[in-house]
Length: 166
Image (cartoon, rainbow, N blue to C red):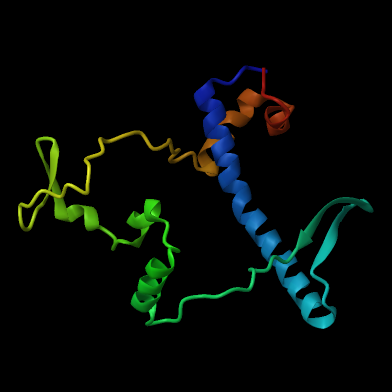
């Protein structure tokens, strides 16, 4: 069996993930629906996953923890009260600002200025562009799998999943 290049291995694994995910999502949805029906009937919120009579896992319904929530239309009042009570994590204040708020500001030298008023916003700093992560595009199963199946040989894709095709 020929060995795969790192790019071929990445393409194959990504293609396999794309091929398996819809099936996995469907199987999970079916299990959830069945369990939801049992929960409504008798309160069962989990069950074992059996393979050849042996428990290999468990499927269960998860529940959100009950607790207070801000009433619709009362967000401003809630924020003011939270500030007064000391319940605001100021390190996360950017999450409170409207989407796209950064577009109002520009960099001028080392300063950040309000693009509408040209006033220096000394409460902001300019962060340079940085790598956030990597993504894989393409690698559609109907293209990658047939192209690599001959290279993987008779052991097929299982050899790759068991540690790689050497």
